[in-house]
Image (cartoon, rainbow, N blue to C red; front, side, top):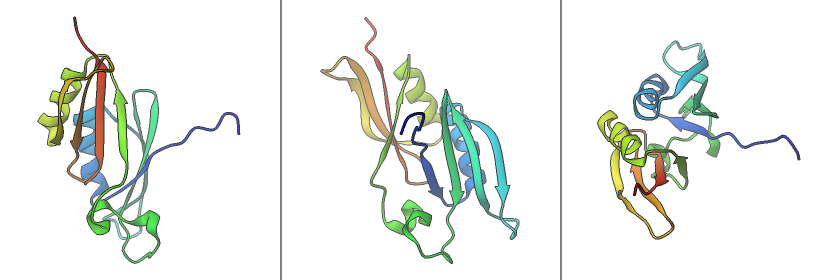
Length: 134
């Protein structure tokens, strides 16, 4: 398959709050959103972070299939979304200031990056990496 790139599609509790958090933490830009008929949840939201798309959806417990479960309902998350940035310290501080929690502190790594992992308020893990400043 040429021309096909994967797009992370995150299930969250409170997609509107997640849109706000991802904008503050990672500079996400909202491209579009589709509300659910209940007026409280989102069926779909399309954001971009840097050059990459990110899709969001609210958790819908009434639809019992695995792709519609938030980390809270699943009891955790099995993936980490990686952000490779020019300045890991700036990106790290922005995420922490927005409400992310450190899971693995940002530090210089043997492979040449400053790297760390945060957990967002919705249960998803984000690794942040960037070149070590000399």
